[in-house]
Length: 377
Length: 256
Image (cartoon, rainbow over all chains, first blue to last red; front, side, top):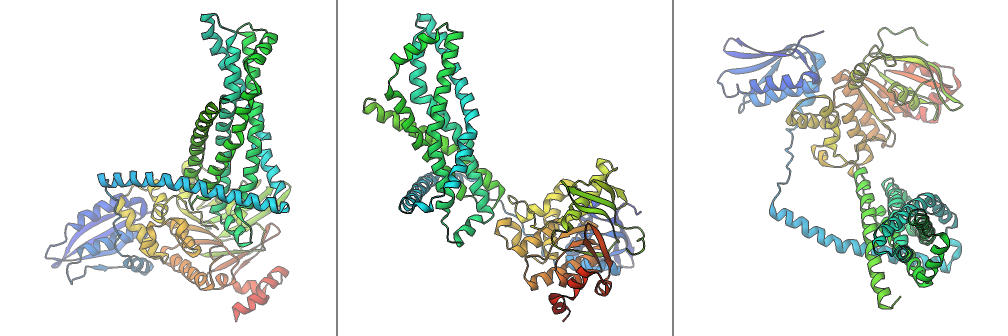
């Protein structure tokens, strides 16, 4: 339709005309930019310069702006460079870009040592903020719980049951599968190494104690933090983004009572159940491997297990579960309600929810270990 | 429908779109003239947005053909299709700005993908687009969550215009704006259409927009175009929905 853009220099009397021809549109922008940059070097010559655009076949914002940019840089002092031969179609476009102020330079903060130190300081101070946020949420949840105790009718049973289905019932297959496999692996490793000392049968002791006290609940808690903690954060976060939480508040509902409490209750009830199922699956897997790989007959396995473990081991494991569930739930809800407007923020908080959830679960586990050791359980 | 339009920018023929058992569009025909502002109206739920989304390829159709810029979008190659997509801009109902990018990055996003231009030129063009849609340059470094509803629409329009398209689709551009803001927006669309030579396909519910901004109006009903023509044609129409729409209480108020 029309040729490549050109910017020719033609002397007209004692003035210099820059004749723009061809298509001045976005697709030719790199060429145009180079030509304009070239022509800008003419600034400062004593000749008077004007830009002739009568031969331009097509003009869009990119072309119009580049002509305007050229005009501005050729303008010296009070003498404005002129644009000549502007057709009626394009004059309004050129007028439009004329109103544009020069782009404000975007200043990126340079990386400095003091800046990095400042960031470290802010991060450390942020830790205190995180803990304060968790305590705050714990308080709010407990307050909501007491309110529910006083007025049991305000408890959201349907919502709690719904969340129970999500975090407990639907989690059973994957939790059972993974703990089963872990049980198998522990038994296989135990037999493999104990066999050298002729102590194969002690694998039952190790499996029983390890699974009931630690692995069962810890592994399940970590998986629940990844599976349900992240879901809570994403749900609450997107509700926050779409102002649904504000809407609840304006209708006189307490988001903690409506959204957080049912989720917390579901999690606190679900985790002991899942931890129990997980422990059973791990023991079953371990027993299976001990039988098929280690030659320990099921009767012998059960007999040994009865001697090796007591109800204390089971209690130590299962008591931790609701506490860990509460920690996961609180972290997830705090992160969910902290989501800002953007999709990126949602992603960051979901990540933080899982990472912090797992971290606090392990910290809690350590605290419990010290506590139970002190009371001799 | 009126006589065939010569060389239409969009030519929609016998389009049928179905969701499950519900037929939303049923053998619909529509032409959009080059350089016009077409207002597209119809009752809520009639399928206005569905038609828009079908034309831009977001909703699959059961039957029919769509030509944009003379390219049949079904039989076109990927590169042809990309070429067409480069030449249109879409303003979604909710703005659909990328929430993790600033206004400046949002507007520059298509440029970065399709054009190989310097950062300086991109920044300058961004400022030009912002000025065109009536926003201050300070807005450029804000995130979409920090903008008001009207500003989001304007930024979304600036992004739709960032590659200087020949055709823009506006899905209810003035919904959610105050009357003054909506009036400004209509004025803006008119100005841009004049300065950039745009063709505008505008889905709207706003009677003011129809009167002040649109060259031609098409009405959707029962999955078909039930009428197309100037505002005077619409007022003269005897179709019951059109009579209600253009002679109802609100219409009389607009006509003063």
